[in-house]
Each structure stands twice: as C-alpha cells, then as structure tokens.
Image 1 (cartoon, rainbow, N blue to C red):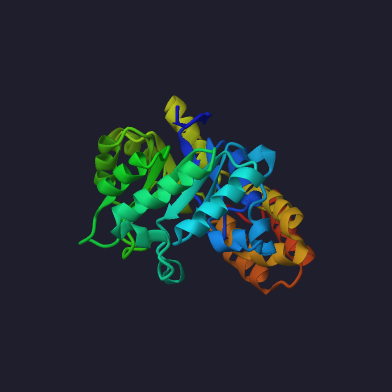
Image 2 (image 1 turned 120 degrees about the vertical axis):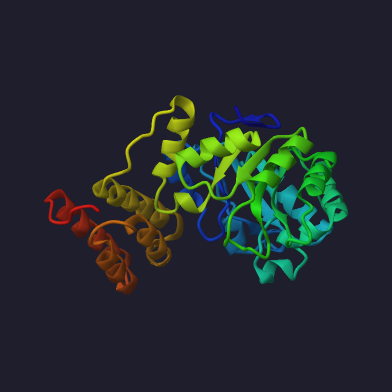
Length: 330
C-alpha cells in the first residue's frame, strides 16, 4: 500500500489537488467514494503568513477527510517556510505538499508553481528548508518539465529526495502543454526508477483500467486522479474496487448522480454559506449532469438561478422526473 512517511493509506488512489475545486466539501465526497488520500487545493504562502481570512478558511479540514495532504505554493524560501510552519502547527493536515506544477502565469511570474521546474538547485534549497522547519512529511507535486527543451523530471525528483522529501507526484505534461495533449507516462516510469521515495503518477487516468495500466507500466506507488473525478466521484470508487479485485463496478445511474450532487451542494452550503455555495455549485452541477439526457436543460437553468433554494429545487425537480422515468439516461 501507499505510505508517505509515517502516513499509511488504505489504497493507492489519490485525489489530485485541483485549484478552485478541492475544498472540504468536495474532499468529503471523494472520501465517501473511497479515495485513499485527498489533496487540498493549493494555498498561497503569503496569504497564510499575512493571515488573510479567505486564505485561512481554505485551511479548514474535517477529520473525516484524513489522511489529507495540504498544498502550499510560493517563490520565496522565507515565506514558504513561514507558511509551512503555520500549516504544521495550526492544522490537522497529515502531509504538507509543495506545488511546483501549476502552469498559470499569475503563479509562475512569482517564481512559484511550475517555474521551479527549470532549476533543480532551487528545488533542493526550497524543499530542504521546509523539511527542516516542520514535523509533518513534505511532498512535492510537479510536472515533467517546463517545455520539451527543459525536461528535468528525473533531476528534479532526485533533488526532492535529497532534500528530505517523503514522496513526489509527477504529472506527465510540461508547463507549456497545460492540460492539452497526451501525458508522458514514460517519464513517470523514469522518475520512479531514479528515486527511492514513493512516486505517484498523474495524467490521462480516465478509467479504472487506465489506473491499472499506469501502475503496471510505470511501477508507481499510487495513482492520482483529477479531472476524471469532476462530477464523477464514482471514478474513485470504481478504481479502488478494480485495483483490488479486478471487478469493474457499474457506472452510476442518473438518479445516483443527482443524489450525490445534492449531497455535495448541502456540504458546500455548510462550508461556505448559501450564496457562495450556489455560485460555486454551478460548475459542479454541470459536471454531474454531463452525459445525462435532459442534463443540458438542467445546466442552463442552474446557470440562470440566483439563489441556493432555486438551485436546490431545480435538482429536486430533475430527480423527481427521473424517479418517474420521464427523463431516460443516455
């Protein structure tokens, strides 16, 4: 089984730390569906050390989510270490993860995220400083490289290991690729062969069969699932079952999707209040409704609704139609 420092997971399936998505409400859904480890969305180091309330709210962890990895990002050693210390001493996270994979310009222009991919020496310096400052195990999530001319994944992973990092997750795309094209699983295999710490593979894991194939082809210790779980936490459950037994569980019914969407909405409302939950739930509801007959109409209604009660009623009405077989699934 996957083990990161002293933290043992019950399986090899990991929820990726997706920005703007992986708050506590979403992570609880992922845990309900069997994820061995859930990762929180990235949090800015400066927001933590300046005690920005919105940032500090992102550090909230429900005990039911554990084990959990909390991800921070930043470009300055001083601020990153201060943020890591705060997370270490003031949260119940099990693992502190450092982001060196985020490709968006507002992060890379601050010498953070995937900008680190260009400098293995900086990676060693930053990770070792954080490791020395905290008690929790420290991990890194990275991409294979900045672009096709700067593929330093092996050197970067080795720098993480030398610095005392407890594990590394590798997304098989470059920063330039963003989320397009194909993920390079061969570079993930090379990283796994080059270090002794656990390696988690990420990229193009869209089905339980993909997860099994990644484990077999790369030898990684865990499989990280991101976009495939959006509106589809069954992907996590089905992958866990498939890896353990070889049995491919059935896809969820339309009613099951609406039921879980409502549970997710309720959890998000408790976390963020009705107004913000109604706004944020629009994208999640669209993901849950994807592929359902009648789902497009529901998405349009949700995007036009103004209140939490209205959104809830739209979903309830759709579920009622499904129960009376008025809306068949595709």
